Image 1 (cartoon, one colour):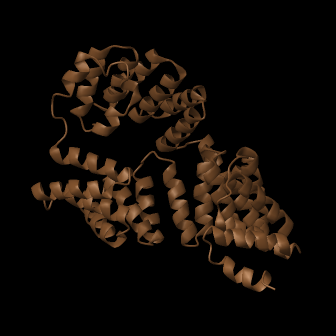
Image 2 (image 1 turned 90 degrees about the vertical axis):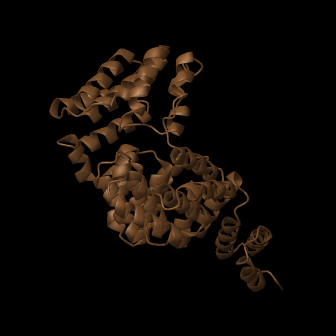
Image 3 (image 1 turned 60 degrees about the vertical axis):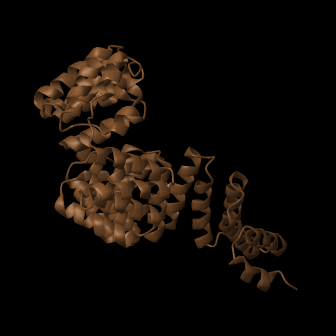
Length: 401
């Protein structure tokens, strides 16, 4: 099924992977292998890539795959090679590996070198990294955090981001006010205000601030991601797709960027571009539910409902306990006026998640068109009880005698 998915979308890209793929593409594919529990294939791919391109990123990614495979010595060797090619690039990895070995002193030594480099991880990233669980109670670990590695504004922003992630925008606003009182015209204040604007639905404010930051720092991944989110929130998918393109062309190793750009292309009606991006993602993660769902919706939008149903059927086989998979196929049957099949799939979705008012309504419409008016009226009333006001029209027309 998933080979068919790849064939549907990106035969040319698949051929590109076989021969002459870029460093970023190699790393993306290696990550996909490791994520799928196939570190050996990741190592093999990266070893071939390294023979052609002596790149520090390839060594670092091979080290990650070797950690997954349990080859700690090989990982140490690769991180050291990455360091020799690009000074500082392998320090964080070395810190992780020595922590796994229980060598707190050496782990902290390399972590300190990372924190003093341009590859410095954020405080949040380090403290939440489970790789350091073996050394986090050591004297060396406590000693390194006695030094202030992060500025006051960096610490405040980290706290602000945490509050936003937990839905506590009031607390985040208090942090922002503290930042503004000390650094009123700083980038940190603008960034924090933009984050709160996004969280509060004030998309035009967030967009104005994000645009200013990304214009001042055009190579900043953080600010470009903020800009893309702001553009999406402000109903500017065309602008967001261009921002995602900038991130991809910068060589950011994140397959999710293709999915995000595909969603923007879907909203602007650029179906072929969207299919190409989803195809690339599915070539890496062929069983991803969200990607298959989007691929099916795009095929439906292009007018090929049969291909859409084929994709949705494959998704159900892969994810039989997810109601959204049944809803996707039911919606395609609904459009095709295959009422019985639509009703059956809506029923399956409701067995898994009975509180979806829209699905109850659509199931009722399907039953009504199948000649089952009494059952349809039951569904319309249940949809209304769940808050769907659109059900009133169907009840008044079909269920009141």
